[in-house]
Length: 305
Image (tube, rainbow, N blue to C red; front, top):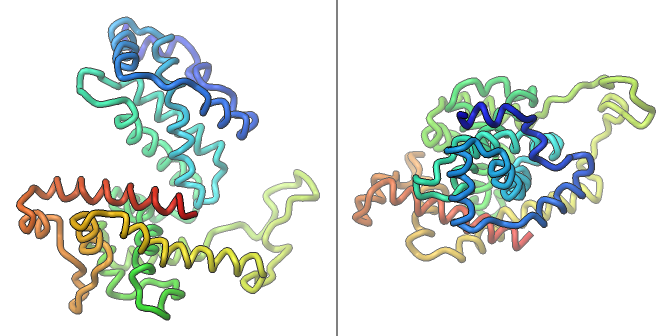
């Protein structure tokens, strides 16, 4: 019996706990036991060779916490976390079905790409203001623009950290790094900054449901909003600097050259190949160091938050 056939014999959601109560679900998946490398490889072989649904279930259940963790990265898009988790679980099950233990990698490393791909597709299907993101390059722009703006803001001169729009030089850097046109960067930034909501109520589900048309007051001076904005600015500035201090000298220089440096000619910092030539390694190795450094910085920022 083939693996795909075996997995289709049963409703795949029967492998996953109910999402009825999100807090209870997250608590439940965080209590599920982790698998050792040997256990994981054995279960994966049973699935590939014998279509063992029980083995598939154990692989899925032991990695549900990974989906919960990744879903938190996408809460800023205004979509319910429960929906993000459901889509991520679909990606996890696809990863389990295709996972080959003989490749020498753990399932967690393999599954991350499948989980993120499903979540990305869900966001692009449901967030109306990203209709511009139709090509692979535009999708990359959509999912990277927000974080790149934070990096630019952290590297801005004192007194200039409160501006919200990208400068012409920053737009040129983003366009070059993400392989899109400068005008596409400008359009995407406008869409993400402006929002896209209906002015009329979506339905008559209850008197507690109000659309923006009912409260079009300016909330920018509301105390809670002001405090939250200051905290975000602090994290984007001092938080980034502390995160950079957590890196070794080579990793820090790579991040600064790749993301924080803007030359007078608006060309940005050094490329992967420039840095590879300087350090005597491959461009792929520089990319790996950059990815690891970014992960370490994110952890540092999470702790600071």
